[in-house]
Length: 421
Image 1: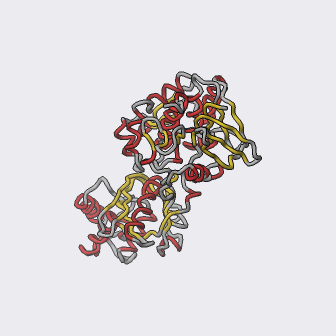
Image 2 (image 1 turned 90 degrees about the horizontal axis):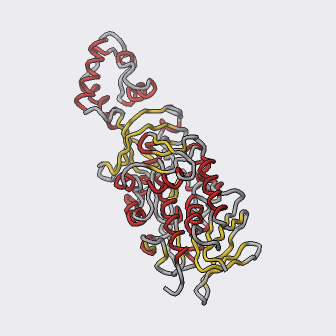
């Protein structure tokens, strides 16, 4: 009989194993793939964005999917605790833009190795290539875990840390939802987040802008009344199927939510190519450029204003003849061009599927979890952590922070749990 069995050897499962084994030798970690920490190894482009050093409020803001739930776990183990955990074990971290923390070595493997070493030092029993088939809560208030080869393990506490259903090649294929459901938990609707967005607009279909990257634009998802639901000011990229890049990935979950709100497939998005300029300032800039070269074609007068392909595209959208010189452009045409630069609106019809997403939205309902301990409100001794929960953030170290924090708290609580409580 183990004190704790942990299903899943990803970020939250490894951290749960490290915490639950600190003062207890009877911990078993089951991982269905060969190799632990597979998602950690590929995070941050293989450098592992291990956490974020921004203040709590900023971190919570960057976890639009139920981030406030983390205030309670943060009081026990937070982003600074994560930094201390790795640095005290010899992995020096460095801060980059927007508070993102990376190992100084730029090697995700160093982060994974540290967790694995900690598990070895704490005598955690690790079984890789062990596929869990079913979990059960017994009449004796213990848990049995059955593998697909029919081996059965028993424990006083069980931690489900199986991840979501995004990046399935790492082993996150949604098993945890099935186990949680078996044990009486409800799962909120799953959807892809941090994923590219699809569009069937003619300019996308004819690949006119394919491969074009726009820097530091304001990309918005529009509500039914044309007001902005969300705007992200970052880089974006046009692709052969729609849009991608950081701004698009951050907007993706709101595309899904607006489709639900508006009860339709096609919704609208908008690009502000000059988010730091007012309409009046942009109009003045354009008029000054046109005035400075009155005999040139409009496109040549505005050369350098923005990426050439996007400039030509918006000139066409404004229905300005390519042979028109700056001297002959009308006020109405200038106004149309300014409007397009500040608010080019186009239709999108969804996102790529969940297996192409970086993060899974939805999961085990947080109403059924004690935030201070990560224990189930339905079954005592059952703990859930990481992406299997209905928590999702933007990329930038926020999801890993959530996984490591909830993993640590679940492990700590499972270690001290006794069914007599």
